[in-house]
Length: 324
Image (cartoon, rainbow, N blue to C red):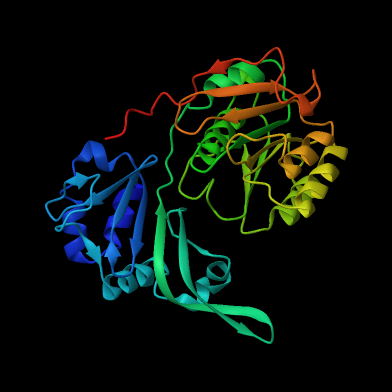
C-alpha cells in the first residue's frame, strides 16, 4: 500500500470515495493534504494549492461545492492516525506531530494544556497537515556520481520546506550502503521521527536507530556500530552540532540535512556552525521544486563568500513534472 492509499484508507467512507474519484496522475503527485475543522479541504501538488470538489475534480478557486471538513470528520481521521490512542502518541503530539504507521509525519494544531508550568498534553485538535512521504529511487545518483565515486566525503544537504532533503537522504543511504562505486559502506541512520526508514528501502548495509534523539543516536552509533557514514535529517540545535563534532573525532563521515529559508545560507547560524567545524567537504543546495541543485565546495573558499568559482547547477529531480 503506497502512502496516499494508506491515508485515504484512514478517512471516513464518504471522503475516501471522493478521493478515489481524483484522476490517478494527479493523486500520485499530491504532497500535502490539509484538513481543518469547519473549513474547505486543501490539497497541495508540490507548492500549488487546490480545493477538492465533490465529484473528485480539483480546482484552484474556492467554489460552493468544494469539500469541507466538519468536526466529526476531523476527529475520525485524527483518531485513526493515532491508532485510537492519543495517550500513546502524546509525546509526539506535544511537539506538534504524529508519526503514522507508514512513516509519514502529520502536523497537528491543537490547544495546549500546561501543568505546573510545563506543557503536559494537547487536546481539541483543529487541523491536520498530512505530508505524503515519497520514495524516488536513484534521485540522488547524479550527486553521488559527482561526490562519492572516488571518495566518501561529509556533506550538508540544505533546502527549504519540501525541497526534497529527506527523499534525497533516503535514496543516497540506499545506494551508498548497497555497493555504489563498488563499495558497501556501513551507514547508520539516526531516524528520530521515523521519516527516513519506515516502510522504505534503506539498503543492505544500513543500521537504523529510530526514535532516539539525534544527539543520543549519534553517540550510540559512533560507539557501537562503527559506521562509515552517519545520516541525520534536519539538524536543528547546538547539542546535535556538538555530537557531530564528537563523531568527526572518531573518524566517522556525515551526511546531514539542514532547513534553510530562501537559500539564505550566510545568515543561518547553525549552518555556519557546521561549516566552522572544518570537517564538511561540500554543501549541496536543493532548490525547491525547480529540479536544480548547486554544489559548493567548502574546502576551496570561505563560507561567508556564499558561493565559489566551481558553482554550477545540476538536475536532481527528474521525476517532477509540471503541476497538475
